[in-house]
Every structure is written in structure tokens, then in C-alpha cells.
Length: 197
Image 1 (tube, rainbow, N blue to C red):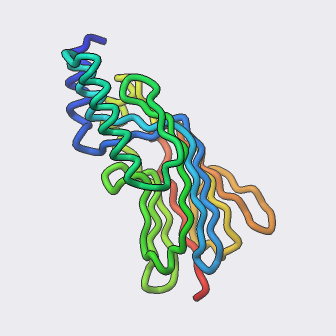
Image 2: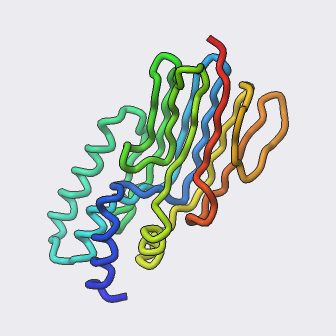
């Protein structure tokens, strides 16, 4: 694909989100009283920088400056334990966050406009856990440019699950709900659970 064609494809999707997760494993452990432990290991591609690289014209020092800016942006969230630049606007990261969704009310990883996972406490005491992804057209454009959202999300909980659309479930005292993400053919991950105050 020509650099110009790649650039035009990326421009079309940049406004839809900044970070695209790939080659990842994400694990969420949440208890019936709302305590959670979320961990992510994998890659994040910063789409605005990918667009600039596709356009060409950035010097090595300018690329280094842009990489530092993205690293600093991610590092604002103290949950990032490791951030290393791979290539082509892609970063290898390790992330961990511990909290209580009943007191926080909501939580999103990575950002609102680049959401891999969100949790929201509802007024009825349930917690809605859901993922997001590029729409089909944007995902096809990304795939054409060599980017595919691919990874695995696992949610483990002893709480009563009211609704879920996992790819598979591993039975046990604390069942594990697994979503294998590879493109956009399947619905976004969703799980609703009941908490106890």
C-alpha cells in the first residue's frame, strides 16, 4: 500500500479514538462487594502518531519527541508499570489498577475515546462491564493498514452474573468469562453483575 493511501485510511479513523490495543491479555477480577483488580499486558498503538509516520517527513528527533510525549501521556495514569516503544507508533505496556467500583462509580481503560474496558455502577446496584471496538468500517480500514484489535479479555467473579456474552466460560468457585477478540465480527464484550453493599 502506498504511503499516501495508508495516510488517508488512518486520517479517517484517528478521530474515532487515539489508542488501539492489540496482542493483549486483559484480566479483571471483581468481588461481589465491588473490589477489583485489573491487569493489561500487550500493545497500544497511538493512531495520531501512526498517521504522522505514514505521512512521512518526521526527523528522527521529531519521532523521538513524539514518542516521549505519548509515553508521558500514558504515564499520567500511575497504573502503567511499564511503557516501552516498539515501532510504528506502537508501545508495549504493562498496566495494573486496584480499586472499588462501588466507591469510584465508574472506571475506563484506556481513555473514554479509546475504550477497551469500562465499568459503571448503576443505581440499582448492578455493575455494567463492557468493552468497545472500532466500528466495522473503521476496523476494516485499520486492518488494511496492518492494524487489528486482537487479544483476550478474562473476567473472574464470584458475584451473581445477570447477563454476559463471553466466548467461553471456565466453571469454578469463581467462574472465568473469556472473550477472544480478533477483529470486529463478534459483539463487544459485555457482562452485568449484581453486587452486595
